Length: 196
Image 1 (cartoon, rainbow, N blue to C red):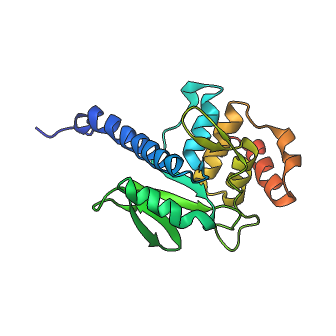
Image 2 (cartoon, rainbow, N blue to C red):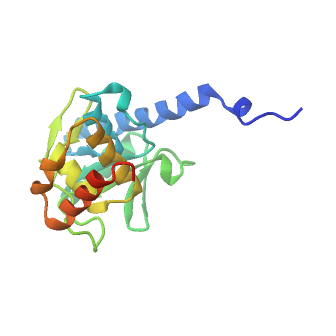
């Protein structure tokens, strides 16, 4: 008798997958903190940290570990992360640290360079690590800097993250005035069509 798709689900594997990402993040930030390297957690983990301040039930899991660092500290970052078991790779213009010799790009810590454009066509550069704050777990990008980054890249996942922030009331229509017209227009488009 053939198994249904539901029967093939392994709850243990699902839980372990989430735990592996959390452990990767904790290991990376611990290594950076021990080395005294300025950093900020960005991306989905930063969004989750902000959302959790308002509504734990609205927190979305993410598979990505994204860290903001300064170019001047990149070699110190590499030393800290390789010392914690990560393997440095540069793929398609992205600096990353794979979580072991058999890891894939999705099993990595992705590094974004502070105060530099992630892509040449982006309207604004990434924030500096100084636009961050300490939480009990790690340093996260300030809410305004995080929203600015998400509006700048504005991929599907960024729009989803922005909707999460909107849904819990962390940002609203008053935020449009904080950004240049191009980014303000993107935020307004999400306000006008919250379901996508």
